[in-house]
Image (cartoon, rainbow over all chains, first blue to last red; front, side, top):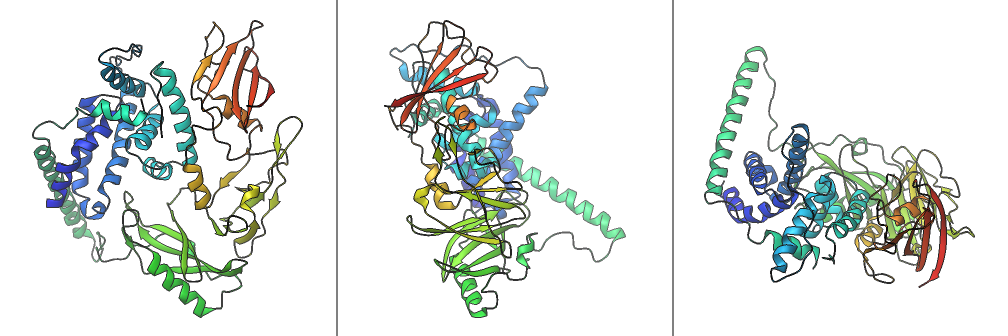
Length: 162
Length: 346
Protein backbone atom coordinates (compact mmCIF):
# COMPACT_ATOMS: atom_id res chain seq x y z
CA UNK A 1 0.00 0.00 0.00
CA UNK A 2 2.94 2.27 -0.58
CA UNK A 3 1.03 4.03 -3.34
CA UNK A 4 -1.82 4.81 -0.94
CA UNK A 5 0.64 6.33 1.51
CA UNK A 6 2.19 8.30 -1.34
CA UNK A 7 -1.25 9.55 -2.32
CA UNK A 8 -1.96 10.68 1.23
CA UNK A 9 1.41 12.37 1.51
CA UNK A 10 1.19 14.11 -1.85
CA UNK A 11 -2.45 15.08 -2.06
CA UNK A 12 -3.51 15.78 1.52
CA UNK A 13 -2.70 19.46 1.34
CA UNK A 14 -4.72 20.00 -1.83
CA UNK A 15 -7.63 17.95 -0.51
CA UNK A 16 -7.53 19.83 2.79
CA UNK A 17 -7.96 23.08 0.91
CA UNK A 18 -11.01 21.73 -0.90
CA UNK A 19 -12.39 20.40 2.39
CA UNK A 20 -11.77 23.76 4.08
CA UNK A 21 -13.86 25.56 1.47
CA UNK A 22 -16.55 22.86 1.52
CA UNK A 23 -16.77 23.33 5.29
CA UNK A 24 -17.16 27.07 4.95
CA UNK A 25 -13.80 27.89 6.51
CA UNK A 26 -13.85 25.51 9.47
CA UNK A 27 -10.31 24.15 9.44
CA UNK A 28 -10.81 21.70 12.29
CA UNK A 29 -13.82 20.16 10.60
CA UNK A 30 -12.00 20.08 7.28
CA UNK A 31 -9.10 18.15 8.77
CA UNK A 32 -11.47 15.77 10.54
CA UNK A 33 -13.47 14.88 7.45
CA UNK A 34 -10.33 14.60 5.33
CA UNK A 35 -8.75 12.19 7.78
CA UNK A 36 -11.96 10.16 7.90
CA UNK A 37 -12.27 10.07 4.12
CA UNK A 38 -8.65 9.05 3.62
CA UNK A 39 -8.92 6.32 6.22
CA UNK A 40 -12.01 4.94 4.53
CA UNK A 41 -10.17 4.88 1.19
CA UNK A 42 -7.49 2.54 2.51
CA UNK A 43 -9.72 -0.54 2.45
CA UNK A 44 -11.04 0.32 -1.01
CA UNK A 45 -7.73 1.30 -2.52
CA UNK A 46 -7.50 -1.52 -5.05
CA UNK A 47 -10.86 -0.52 -6.48
CA UNK A 48 -10.36 3.24 -6.51
CA UNK A 49 -6.65 3.56 -7.14
CA UNK A 50 -7.16 4.58 -10.77
CA UNK A 51 -9.00 7.74 -9.74
CA UNK A 52 -8.53 8.27 -6.04
CA UNK A 53 -8.83 12.03 -6.27
CA UNK A 54 -12.29 11.86 -7.82
CA UNK A 55 -13.38 9.41 -5.15
CA UNK A 56 -11.94 11.64 -2.43
CA UNK A 57 -13.72 14.73 -3.73
CA UNK A 58 -17.08 12.94 -3.81
CA UNK A 59 -16.53 11.60 -0.32
CA UNK A 60 -15.45 15.02 0.97
CA UNK A 61 -18.52 16.70 -0.52
CA UNK A 62 -20.75 14.07 1.08
CA UNK A 63 -18.95 14.31 4.39
CA UNK A 64 -19.18 18.10 4.41
CA UNK A 65 -22.89 17.92 3.61
CA UNK A 66 -23.51 15.33 6.32
CA UNK A 67 -21.54 17.39 8.77
CA UNK A 68 -23.91 20.25 8.20
CA UNK A 69 -26.88 17.97 8.54
CA UNK A 70 -25.56 16.81 11.88
CA UNK A 71 -24.92 20.38 12.91
CA UNK A 72 -28.45 21.31 11.91
CA UNK A 73 -29.85 18.67 14.27
CA UNK A 74 -27.57 19.61 17.12
CA UNK A 75 -27.87 23.10 18.61
CA UNK A 76 -24.51 24.77 18.56
CA UNK A 77 -23.09 28.20 18.85
CA UNK A 78 -23.55 29.78 15.42
CA UNK A 79 -20.55 30.49 13.32
CA UNK A 80 -19.46 34.08 13.29
CA UNK A 81 -20.94 35.08 9.97
CA UNK A 82 -21.09 38.79 10.51
CA UNK A 83 -21.11 41.38 7.82
CA UNK A 84 -18.56 40.79 5.13
CA UNK A 85 -15.83 43.41 5.36
CA UNK A 86 -15.63 45.44 2.23
CA UNK A 87 -13.02 48.02 3.13
CA UNK A 88 -9.88 48.07 1.06
CA UNK A 89 -6.54 48.83 2.57
CA UNK A 90 -2.97 47.70 2.66
CA UNK A 91 -4.08 44.17 3.58
CA UNK A 92 -6.55 43.95 0.75
CA UNK A 93 -5.65 40.39 -0.13
CA UNK A 94 -6.30 39.28 3.44
CA UNK A 95 -9.70 40.95 3.43
CA UNK A 96 -10.55 39.35 0.09
CA UNK A 97 -9.44 35.93 1.26
CA UNK A 98 -11.40 36.20 4.46
CA UNK A 99 -14.52 37.52 2.80
CA UNK A 100 -14.68 34.86 0.11
CA UNK A 101 -14.65 32.16 2.78
CA UNK A 102 -17.25 34.01 4.83
CA UNK A 103 -19.42 34.44 1.76
CA UNK A 104 -19.05 30.74 0.89
CA UNK A 105 -20.07 29.84 4.42
CA UNK A 106 -23.35 31.64 3.93
CA UNK A 107 -24.32 29.65 0.85
CA UNK A 108 -26.43 26.50 1.03
CA UNK A 109 -24.15 23.47 1.20
CA UNK A 110 -24.87 22.18 -2.28
CA UNK A 111 -24.45 25.59 -3.87
CA UNK A 112 -21.16 26.00 -2.04
CA UNK A 113 -19.97 22.58 -3.12
CA UNK A 114 -20.80 23.37 -6.74
CA UNK A 115 -18.80 26.61 -6.67
CA UNK A 116 -15.84 24.99 -4.91
CA UNK A 117 -15.70 22.07 -7.33
CA UNK A 118 -16.26 24.20 -10.42
CA UNK A 119 -14.00 27.15 -9.64
CA UNK A 120 -11.47 25.88 -7.11
CA UNK A 121 -11.01 22.31 -8.34
CA UNK A 122 -11.68 23.28 -11.96
CA UNK A 123 -14.14 20.46 -12.60
CA UNK A 124 -16.43 20.70 -15.59
CA UNK A 125 -20.18 20.86 -15.09
CA UNK A 126 -20.48 17.19 -15.97
CA UNK A 127 -17.69 16.20 -13.58
CA UNK A 128 -19.23 18.32 -10.84
CA UNK A 129 -22.60 16.71 -11.43
CA UNK A 130 -21.03 13.27 -11.25
CA UNK A 131 -19.14 14.15 -8.09
CA UNK A 132 -22.22 15.48 -6.34
CA UNK A 133 -24.60 12.89 -7.76
CA UNK A 134 -26.91 15.42 -9.35
CA UNK A 135 -27.81 16.55 -12.86
CA UNK A 136 -25.86 18.96 -15.02
CA UNK A 137 -28.88 21.26 -15.02
CA UNK A 138 -28.71 21.46 -11.24
CA UNK A 139 -25.03 22.32 -11.44
CA UNK A 140 -25.74 25.04 -13.97
CA UNK A 141 -28.51 26.63 -11.95
CA UNK A 142 -26.62 26.34 -8.66
CA UNK A 143 -23.57 27.90 -10.30
CA UNK A 144 -25.62 30.74 -11.67
CA UNK A 145 -27.38 31.44 -8.40
CA UNK A 146 -24.24 30.87 -6.37
CA UNK A 147 -22.22 33.39 -8.35
CA UNK A 148 -24.99 35.96 -8.10
CA UNK A 149 -25.26 35.37 -4.36
CA UNK A 150 -21.48 35.62 -3.92
CA UNK A 151 -21.48 38.96 -5.64
CA UNK A 152 -24.24 40.18 -3.38
CA UNK A 153 -22.44 38.94 -0.29
CA UNK A 154 -19.09 40.35 -1.25
CA UNK A 155 -20.32 43.85 -1.84
CA UNK A 156 -17.87 46.00 -3.70
CA UNK A 157 -15.28 43.26 -3.88
CA UNK A 158 -16.57 42.22 -7.27
CA UNK A 159 -15.79 38.68 -8.25
CA UNK A 160 -15.16 37.58 -11.79
CA UNK A 161 -14.76 34.14 -13.23
CA UNK A 162 -13.45 32.59 -16.37
CA UNK B 1 -10.50 39.50 -8.03
CA UNK B 2 -11.38 36.21 -9.71
CA UNK B 3 -13.30 33.70 -7.66
CA UNK B 4 -10.67 31.03 -8.20
CA UNK B 5 -7.90 33.41 -7.24
CA UNK B 6 -9.81 34.46 -4.13
CA UNK B 7 -10.31 30.83 -3.10
CA UNK B 8 -6.66 30.04 -3.72
CA UNK B 9 -5.58 33.04 -1.69
CA UNK B 10 -7.91 32.01 1.11
CA UNK B 11 -6.36 28.54 1.27
CA UNK B 12 -2.76 29.37 0.40
CA UNK B 13 -1.52 29.07 3.97
CA UNK B 14 -3.37 25.86 4.72
CA UNK B 15 -1.49 22.64 5.25
CA UNK B 16 -2.14 19.50 7.22
CA UNK B 17 -0.81 19.29 10.76
CA UNK B 18 2.53 17.59 11.37
CA UNK B 19 2.05 13.86 11.70
CA UNK B 20 -1.19 13.88 9.69
CA UNK B 21 -0.02 11.26 7.19
CA UNK B 22 1.10 8.94 9.99
CA UNK B 23 -2.22 9.39 11.77
CA UNK B 24 -4.14 8.56 8.61
CA UNK B 25 -2.07 5.45 7.92
CA UNK B 26 -2.31 4.18 11.48
CA UNK B 27 -6.04 4.88 11.68
CA UNK B 28 -6.68 3.32 8.27
CA UNK B 29 -4.82 0.14 9.19
CA UNK B 30 -6.67 -0.11 12.50
CA UNK B 31 -10.01 0.39 10.79
CA UNK B 32 -9.17 -2.11 8.06
CA UNK B 33 -8.05 -4.71 10.60
CA UNK B 34 -11.26 -4.28 12.58
CA UNK B 35 -13.28 -4.70 9.40
CA UNK B 36 -11.43 -7.86 8.41
CA UNK B 37 -11.93 -9.29 11.88
CA UNK B 38 -15.63 -8.52 11.71
CA UNK B 39 -15.95 -10.12 8.28
CA UNK B 40 -13.97 -13.16 9.39
CA UNK B 41 -16.20 -13.56 12.41
CA UNK B 42 -19.33 -13.25 10.28
CA UNK B 43 -18.01 -15.77 7.78
CA UNK B 44 -17.15 -18.19 10.54
CA UNK B 45 -20.62 -17.78 11.98
CA UNK B 46 -22.32 -18.36 8.67
CA UNK B 47 -20.04 -21.24 7.80
CA UNK B 48 -21.47 -23.09 10.76
CA UNK B 49 -24.94 -23.10 9.31
CA UNK B 50 -24.37 -22.76 5.61
CA UNK B 51 -22.34 -24.68 3.16
CA UNK B 52 -21.30 -23.81 -0.34
CA UNK B 53 -22.16 -20.14 -0.03
CA UNK B 54 -19.72 -17.75 -1.63
CA UNK B 55 -19.66 -14.63 0.48
CA UNK B 56 -17.17 -12.54 -1.35
CA UNK B 57 -16.87 -11.68 -4.97
CA UNK B 58 -13.84 -13.05 -6.68
CA UNK B 59 -11.63 -10.28 -7.99
CA UNK B 60 -11.49 -12.07 -11.33
CA UNK B 61 -15.26 -12.14 -11.69
CA UNK B 62 -16.40 -9.78 -14.46
CA UNK B 63 -18.84 -7.03 -13.48
CA UNK B 64 -22.46 -7.65 -14.46
CA UNK B 65 -24.85 -4.74 -14.52
CA UNK B 66 -28.57 -5.05 -14.09
CA UNK B 67 -29.71 -3.73 -17.48
CA UNK B 68 -32.07 -5.54 -19.83
CA UNK B 69 -30.21 -4.15 -22.85
CA UNK B 70 -27.25 -6.38 -22.06
CA UNK B 71 -29.21 -9.41 -23.15
CA UNK B 72 -32.00 -7.92 -25.30
CA UNK B 73 -32.79 -9.19 -28.78
CA UNK B 74 -31.21 -6.97 -31.39
CA UNK B 75 -33.59 -4.39 -32.88
CA UNK B 76 -33.35 -2.22 -35.97
CA UNK B 77 -33.26 -2.90 -39.70
CA UNK B 78 -29.68 -4.21 -39.54
CA UNK B 79 -30.40 -6.68 -36.76
CA UNK B 80 -29.56 -9.65 -38.95
CA UNK B 81 -26.33 -8.20 -40.33
CA UNK B 82 -23.99 -10.31 -38.21
CA UNK B 83 -20.85 -9.10 -39.92
CA UNK B 84 -21.73 -5.46 -39.26
CA UNK B 85 -22.65 -6.24 -35.68
CA UNK B 86 -19.34 -7.99 -35.12
CA UNK B 87 -17.54 -5.03 -36.70
CA UNK B 88 -19.37 -2.69 -34.31
CA UNK B 89 -18.38 -4.76 -31.30
CA UNK B 90 -14.76 -4.78 -32.43
CA UNK B 91 -14.82 -0.99 -32.79
CA UNK B 92 -16.50 -0.67 -29.41
CA UNK B 93 -13.89 -2.80 -27.67
CA UNK B 94 -11.11 -0.85 -29.32
CA UNK B 95 -12.69 2.50 -28.44
CA UNK B 96 -13.59 1.77 -24.82
CA UNK B 97 -10.79 2.94 -22.58
CA UNK B 98 -10.29 1.88 -18.99
CA UNK B 99 -9.21 4.86 -16.92
CA UNK B 100 -10.56 7.41 -14.52
CA UNK B 101 -14.21 7.00 -15.42
CA UNK B 102 -14.37 3.29 -16.19
CA UNK B 103 -12.11 1.12 -14.08
CA UNK B 104 -13.06 -2.31 -15.41
CA UNK B 105 -15.07 -3.62 -18.33
CA UNK B 106 -16.96 -6.84 -18.69
CA UNK B 107 -16.72 -8.98 -21.81
CA UNK B 108 -20.53 -8.78 -22.13
CA UNK B 109 -20.68 -5.92 -24.69
CA UNK B 110 -23.91 -6.42 -26.60
CA UNK B 111 -25.46 -4.72 -29.62
CA UNK B 112 -29.13 -4.07 -28.81
CA UNK B 113 -30.01 -2.05 -31.90
CA UNK B 114 -28.48 -1.69 -35.36
CA UNK B 115 -29.87 0.36 -38.20
CA UNK B 116 -29.36 2.64 -41.17
CA UNK B 117 -29.40 6.41 -40.86
CA UNK B 118 -28.73 9.14 -43.39
CA UNK B 119 -25.33 9.49 -41.73
CA UNK B 120 -24.36 5.85 -42.01
CA UNK B 121 -24.92 2.50 -40.37
CA UNK B 122 -25.00 2.71 -36.62
CA UNK B 123 -25.32 0.35 -33.72
CA UNK B 124 -26.19 0.89 -30.09
CA UNK B 125 -24.21 -1.11 -27.58
CA UNK B 126 -24.45 -1.81 -23.85
CA UNK B 127 -21.74 -3.20 -21.61
CA UNK B 128 -21.28 -3.78 -17.89
CA UNK B 129 -18.52 -1.72 -16.33
CA UNK B 130 -17.13 -0.80 -12.97
CA UNK B 131 -16.86 2.88 -12.12
CA UNK B 132 -15.29 4.74 -9.20
CA UNK B 133 -17.37 5.29 -6.06
CA UNK B 134 -19.95 2.65 -6.92
CA UNK B 135 -19.76 -0.87 -5.54
CA UNK B 136 -22.21 -2.31 -8.05
CA UNK B 137 -21.45 -2.52 -11.78
CA UNK B 138 -23.07 0.09 -13.98
CA UNK B 139 -23.91 0.10 -17.69
CA UNK B 140 -21.93 1.79 -20.40
CA UNK B 141 -24.17 2.59 -23.37
CA UNK B 142 -23.01 4.12 -26.60
CA UNK B 143 -23.28 4.46 -30.33
CA UNK B 144 -20.91 3.15 -32.99
CA UNK B 145 -21.03 4.39 -36.56
CA UNK B 146 -19.35 1.99 -38.97
CA UNK B 147 -16.09 1.36 -37.12
CA UNK B 148 -15.98 4.42 -34.88
CA UNK B 149 -17.34 4.95 -31.39
CA UNK B 150 -19.27 8.21 -31.66
CA UNK B 151 -20.23 8.58 -28.01
CA UNK B 152 -20.60 6.67 -24.78
CA UNK B 153 -22.60 7.34 -21.64
CA UNK B 154 -22.23 5.72 -18.26
CA UNK B 155 -25.73 4.94 -17.05
CA UNK B 156 -25.76 5.00 -13.29
CA UNK B 157 -28.43 2.82 -11.72
CA UNK B 158 -31.39 4.99 -10.79
CA UNK B 159 -29.91 8.09 -12.43
CA UNK B 160 -31.18 9.88 -15.48
CA UNK B 161 -29.90 8.69 -18.85
CA UNK B 162 -29.63 11.15 -21.71
CA UNK B 163 -30.08 8.42 -24.33
CA UNK B 164 -29.55 10.64 -27.34
CA UNK B 165 -26.69 10.66 -29.84
CA UNK B 166 -25.89 13.10 -32.62
CA UNK B 167 -24.26 12.31 -35.94
CA UNK B 168 -23.52 14.41 -38.99
CA UNK B 169 -22.54 18.01 -39.39
CA UNK B 170 -23.56 21.29 -37.83
CA UNK B 171 -25.65 21.97 -40.94
CA UNK B 172 -27.51 18.66 -41.02
CA UNK B 173 -27.53 16.28 -38.11
CA UNK B 174 -29.05 12.92 -37.33
CA UNK B 175 -30.24 12.32 -33.80
CA UNK B 176 -30.53 8.73 -32.58
CA UNK B 177 -32.82 8.74 -29.57
CA UNK B 178 -33.69 5.99 -27.12
CA UNK B 179 -37.24 5.75 -25.84
CA UNK B 180 -36.34 4.37 -22.39
CA UNK B 181 -40.01 3.62 -21.91
CA UNK B 182 -41.25 7.15 -22.50
CA UNK B 183 -42.32 9.35 -25.37
CA UNK B 184 -39.91 11.83 -26.91
CA UNK B 185 -41.00 15.09 -28.50
CA UNK B 186 -38.77 17.30 -30.58
CA UNK B 187 -39.02 20.79 -31.95
CA UNK B 188 -37.07 23.25 -34.06
CA UNK B 189 -37.28 26.94 -34.88
CA UNK B 190 -38.89 28.65 -31.91
CA UNK B 191 -41.29 31.46 -32.75
CA UNK B 192 -41.48 34.64 -30.74
CA UNK B 193 -44.94 36.15 -30.55
CA UNK B 194 -46.22 39.67 -30.23
CA UNK B 195 -46.35 39.18 -26.48
CA UNK B 196 -42.60 38.45 -26.59
CA UNK B 197 -43.15 34.86 -25.44
CA UNK B 198 -41.67 31.95 -27.34
CA UNK B 199 -43.58 29.00 -28.70
CA UNK B 200 -42.52 25.80 -30.39
CA UNK B 201 -44.26 23.27 -32.53
CA UNK B 202 -43.65 19.82 -31.11
CA UNK B 203 -43.38 16.54 -33.02
CA UNK B 204 -43.61 13.14 -31.43
CA UNK B 205 -40.63 10.95 -32.28
CA UNK B 206 -41.53 7.69 -33.98
CA UNK B 207 -39.90 4.72 -32.29
CA UNK B 208 -39.09 1.36 -33.81
CA UNK B 209 -37.64 -1.23 -31.46
CA UNK B 210 -37.23 1.52 -28.86
CA UNK B 211 -35.11 3.80 -31.04
CA UNK B 212 -36.05 6.86 -33.10
CA UNK B 213 -33.95 8.47 -35.80
CA UNK B 214 -34.62 12.16 -36.34
CA UNK B 215 -33.01 14.55 -38.83
CA UNK B 216 -32.71 18.19 -37.87
CA UNK B 217 -30.51 21.20 -38.47
CA UNK B 218 -28.61 22.24 -35.36
CA UNK B 219 -28.82 25.84 -36.56
CA UNK B 220 -32.60 25.64 -36.12
CA UNK B 221 -32.19 25.04 -32.39
CA UNK B 222 -33.61 21.54 -32.10
CA UNK B 223 -34.80 20.56 -28.64
CA UNK B 224 -35.67 17.05 -27.51
CA UNK B 225 -37.90 16.34 -24.52
CA UNK B 226 -38.48 12.93 -22.91
CA UNK B 227 -41.87 12.89 -21.25
CA UNK B 228 -45.08 10.96 -20.82
CA UNK B 229 -47.24 13.77 -22.22
CA UNK B 230 -46.65 16.08 -25.12
CA UNK B 231 -45.92 19.68 -24.24
CA UNK B 232 -48.51 22.26 -25.32
CA UNK B 233 -47.51 24.45 -28.25
CA UNK B 234 -47.07 27.56 -26.16
CA UNK B 235 -45.00 25.79 -23.58
CA UNK B 236 -41.42 26.55 -24.37
CA UNK B 237 -39.54 24.66 -21.76
CA UNK B 238 -41.69 23.72 -18.84
CA UNK B 239 -42.81 20.16 -19.54
CA UNK B 240 -40.68 17.05 -19.65
CA UNK B 241 -37.05 16.35 -19.30
CA UNK B 242 -34.78 17.86 -21.88
CA UNK B 243 -32.23 15.45 -23.30
CA UNK B 244 -29.05 16.58 -24.96
CA UNK B 245 -26.44 14.82 -27.06
CA UNK B 246 -22.92 15.24 -25.79
CA UNK B 247 -21.90 17.80 -28.40
CA UNK B 248 -24.67 20.14 -27.33
CA UNK B 249 -24.06 19.49 -23.66
CA UNK B 250 -20.42 20.45 -24.16
CA UNK B 251 -21.51 23.72 -25.75
CA UNK B 252 -23.64 24.46 -22.70
CA UNK B 253 -20.63 24.00 -20.44
CA UNK B 254 -19.10 27.17 -21.75
CA UNK B 255 -19.96 30.04 -19.44
CA UNK B 256 -20.55 33.29 -21.24
CA UNK B 257 -20.42 35.95 -18.58
CA UNK B 258 -19.32 38.72 -20.93
CA UNK B 259 -22.18 38.73 -23.42
CA UNK B 260 -24.07 41.89 -24.24
CA UNK B 261 -23.25 44.80 -22.03
CA UNK B 262 -20.87 42.60 -20.08
CA UNK B 263 -22.23 43.65 -16.71
CA UNK B 264 -22.26 41.15 -13.92
CA UNK B 265 -23.67 42.95 -10.93
CA UNK B 266 -26.91 43.51 -9.14
CA UNK B 267 -27.36 47.26 -9.02
CA UNK B 268 -30.01 49.45 -7.43
CA UNK B 269 -31.66 52.45 -8.98
CA UNK B 270 -33.77 53.36 -5.96
CA UNK B 271 -32.92 54.47 -2.45
CA UNK B 272 -35.16 51.76 -1.03
CA UNK B 273 -33.38 48.42 -1.40
CA UNK B 274 -35.25 46.19 1.04
CA UNK B 275 -36.44 43.57 0.57
CA UNK B 276 -34.00 42.76 -2.19
CA UNK B 277 -36.75 40.94 -4.11
CA UNK B 278 -40.50 41.05 -3.70
CA UNK B 279 -42.37 38.04 -2.42
CA UNK B 280 -40.56 35.04 -1.07
CA UNK B 281 -38.23 34.22 -3.93
CA UNK B 282 -35.40 36.27 -2.56
CA UNK B 283 -32.66 34.47 -4.42
CA UNK B 284 -34.38 34.14 -7.77
CA UNK B 285 -32.83 35.83 -10.77
CA UNK B 286 -35.25 37.63 -13.03
CA UNK B 287 -33.82 35.72 -15.98
CA UNK B 288 -34.94 32.45 -14.38
CA UNK B 289 -38.37 33.86 -13.80
CA UNK B 290 -38.61 35.04 -17.39
CA UNK B 291 -37.51 31.65 -18.64
CA UNK B 292 -40.15 29.93 -16.55
CA UNK B 293 -42.76 32.26 -18.04
CA UNK B 294 -41.67 31.60 -21.61
CA UNK B 295 -39.93 34.88 -22.34
CA UNK B 296 -36.63 33.10 -22.93
CA UNK B 297 -36.06 30.12 -25.17
CA UNK B 298 -33.94 27.07 -24.48
CA UNK B 299 -30.19 27.64 -24.30
CA UNK B 300 -30.51 31.31 -23.45
CA UNK B 301 -27.72 31.75 -20.92
CA UNK B 302 -28.64 33.19 -17.57
CA UNK B 303 -27.50 36.76 -17.44
CA UNK B 304 -26.08 37.78 -14.19
CA UNK B 305 -26.80 41.46 -14.00
CA UNK B 306 -29.91 43.22 -12.90
CA UNK B 307 -30.86 46.79 -12.13
CA UNK B 308 -33.53 46.73 -9.45
CA UNK B 309 -35.78 49.44 -8.12
CA UNK B 310 -38.75 49.78 -5.81
CA UNK B 311 -41.09 52.21 -7.57
CA UNK B 312 -42.98 55.01 -5.80
CA UNK B 313 -46.27 53.13 -6.31
CA UNK B 314 -44.93 50.12 -4.43
CA UNK B 315 -44.22 47.91 -7.40
CA UNK B 316 -40.84 46.35 -8.02
CA UNK B 317 -39.05 46.81 -11.33
CA UNK B 318 -36.07 44.97 -12.67
CA UNK B 319 -34.12 45.38 -15.89
CA UNK B 320 -31.72 42.93 -17.42
CA UNK B 321 -30.72 41.85 -20.90
CA UNK B 322 -31.52 38.78 -22.87
CA UNK B 323 -31.87 37.75 -26.50
CA UNK B 324 -29.53 40.66 -27.34
CA UNK B 325 -31.91 43.24 -26.01
CA UNK B 326 -32.85 44.92 -22.80
CA UNK B 327 -35.88 43.61 -21.01
CA UNK B 328 -37.70 44.85 -17.99
CA UNK B 329 -40.13 43.09 -15.68
CA UNK B 330 -42.63 44.53 -13.25
CA UNK B 331 -43.79 42.78 -10.09
CA UNK B 332 -46.51 43.69 -7.63
CA UNK B 333 -45.37 44.42 -4.08
CA UNK B 334 -46.35 40.90 -3.02
CA UNK B 335 -44.16 39.35 -5.71
CA UNK B 336 -46.93 38.68 -8.24
CA UNK B 337 -45.59 38.94 -11.76
CA UNK B 338 -47.12 41.91 -13.59
CA UNK B 339 -45.66 42.21 -17.08
CA UNK B 340 -42.60 42.22 -19.29
CA UNK B 341 -41.46 45.48 -20.84
CA UNK B 342 -39.37 45.30 -24.02
CA UNK B 343 -36.40 47.61 -23.87
CA UNK B 344 -35.07 47.28 -27.40
CA UNK B 345 -31.62 46.30 -28.57
CA UNK B 346 -28.66 47.53 -26.59
